[in-house]
Image (cartoon, rainbow, N blue to C red; front, top):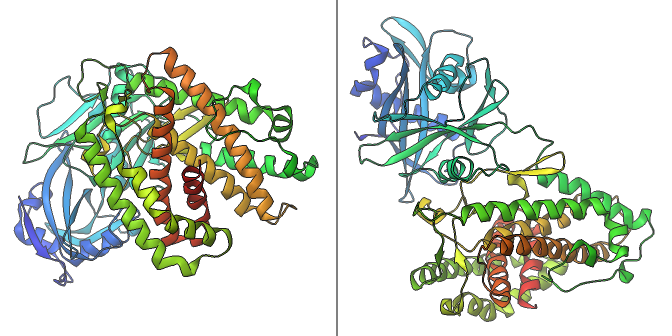
Length: 543
């Protein structure tokens, strides 16, 4: 059902069609006009559109399907956007026809007259009637749905009726609707020819494993396309009441910690240090460090480590569903990892060489160290002897950082299991060492420390260099406590992370991978922050 049209075709001023709305998508003339530059211009303005850095060549209608109930019909479109750069992306766009002059002026796609009724085609998520229909379709889903658009619901989603719906607010890549102030339906905008990992992981963790520290899975909408691929377009979960995410929480806490340097008259040079990645218990943290940073911060780190371990224990305890059964390291995985890493590493090397002129001070010094030691780093990535690794690989979060964790009272809830944004859907489902998620969080702690220093530099009396020194000491205690708690929890539950040296090797490998990945982003968008991943890389190669 591929209907192609070059987006350079100018759209007619006045469009009149005699078809019924229910048959409009079968009209080739309408589809041709709709896919013209009207849609291209509309998509470019959408927050959820991820192709802004590329040039659209043309848009195809890959699939369309009805989203309907009791004679009320909306259309779901799967758009294939082909780029001049010779690749394509798929997006989901639900559409509706409205005749109200004042309705949704910002979300109009096309002015049109249907059977003499003048109106507009708009994104259907703006209509309460559409949002209600989708909610009710999930609520009344049959146990086995074999139609093209398949609605599913969890056994926990009962005795509910529609009350209200509203947009969640400023999101980047998806559109989320809050229902009854209790549930969230996330519409995935960028689509892949497979079930979305966020849906798979959410359903598995909450339905099969009863993991409580993630929003409970309540239902989903999948579409079976003409190639028989099952594509997730919507995921319904409980709304977790929360006090914000862990990133904002950490920034507030760390601001207090750095303010304490002056407030408590702490001499940075006399702060006791510890080895990097030393497994610690709260009792191992010196009183001077507790006095400086406060016991509350360390208690929270301990809780977050426990929740992370519990998530991995749940993900690593499956022996029936092959998508989730633990596996060991093997040759295929090593080849996949090495190719991926070498490609990314070469890309970042080129970026550094092209951006050296944007760096100064410590960042420039660390960038030169990175270039001078490039062969050592490259060697770290390729001399990977999997036969020595005894631990297990499991499905992991894949994009785990403080922004993916909600804070509620003294606890944490983990969300957004879509995986690494730059990765293909297949790569996101590859089983990885659980320490990959731990490394993601450690990089996030490192970022939070430096972001606090950068964002509040005028509030602190100490020179930036001294603040960096204090930050690195704090980072060692935070990660040490996290690691000590996490390893104890996973070992008690028999999740196999490998022997001690292996754990350290994998953690450092994943940290290096993550920091090299971040480096490209920082050099391209905010070079003054490149010091953060560069310092992370330096920590590993000199450890």
